[in-house]
Image: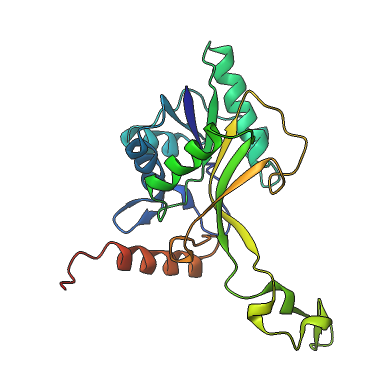
Length: 232
């Protein structure tokens, strides 16, 4: 049995009310709920929130909100892991136990159900503990630099300055959309380690949404991807 857990606290700071802010016509959390529904993978889709309005919106779109998250797990310093653990423990106390859990972020409107399905199937048929969304870096990290206090440049790896991009190893990053966990196994490594399977998404389906600028960019990407007015 599988459960989807969507963390969605009410106190987002950089984008107020981010998790239910209208995104291309409906609350952004609705996209994550609908993606989970369309995948057909879950016996239950849970939204973990401390906010009555978010709970109401989540229910309107078909998610379950069997509890309100305590305030101690809803501040700026609480990690996603603690929120998911609380949700699973609360469900277990109610007699609900699952084999696989998928943490699905509330701000993932570009995610397609096929990637959720691929993540689950890859994990199910492996000895790994996690699978998660990932994507390639758009520029070789080995040639990156920082800006010093006196506003000059300092390369992290100066020895790579003259190397061709195609000669540098490709790097990947967390796409910040979903994280599958085999609940029958205990991890001894970090998420981005040997116990995890990365599910690679194309970069045009990945956009962090942490600022208003990110939000505008994500809406533009979504509109391009879902514009049915073009004809061939």
